[in-house]
Amino acid sequence: MEIRSIHTLDDVRPFINFEVNVGGGTLQLEGHEYYCIDQSCNCAIVNIMVHEVGGSRLTQLIYGWRPYKHYVKQNFFKRDCESMVRGDLSLPEPKTHLNKMILAGFQNWLRQNKKEKDELFAGRYKKFRKKIREIGEDEIGGFARTKVLSDNEMIEVLKNLTQSDIADMIELYGKITKK
Ligand SMILES: [Zn+2]
Image 1 (cartoon, rainbow, N blue to C red):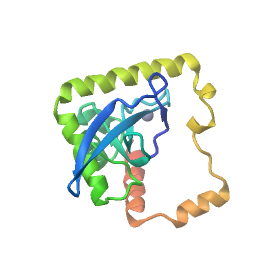
Image 2: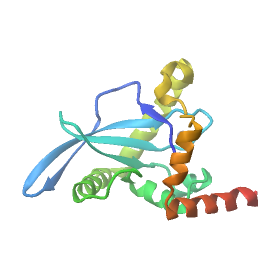
Image 3: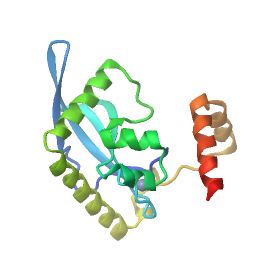
């Protein structure tokens, strides 16, 4: 699952704040949000870059604030839909103890007033999308554009496919051919 995303343009200050207890101490964390810029896409997903307050990046989370059925409709795999609505570590992030604690801290932050926070994400996503439409996707710069792979890069990707990637591709192929 590749999601083209870029930092929210409105507010570069992190707005997500929570803490986790690790090894007898408390880590103060904050999160920056990133949204998809693809105007033909209606994923409604936020990527959250988590770092220690004033410190370096620790991990990245993914969260979907809309109901489960919205994500199923976007053709995501069912297990991805389930994890998105709960909040999860982004795909490449290792499931270390610290990362799991950070995820639990985020889910706890969310639970404190889920309805209000979901509305907050929805509102910021809407504002972000409006700004993208005004500015135009191309003006945002190369970072945001879809990466086109060279033949050599493609070969590397294919060599590194795992069993589960292949299972995903077969499932996706099944979905496409059924239509
Ligand atoms: Zn999208």
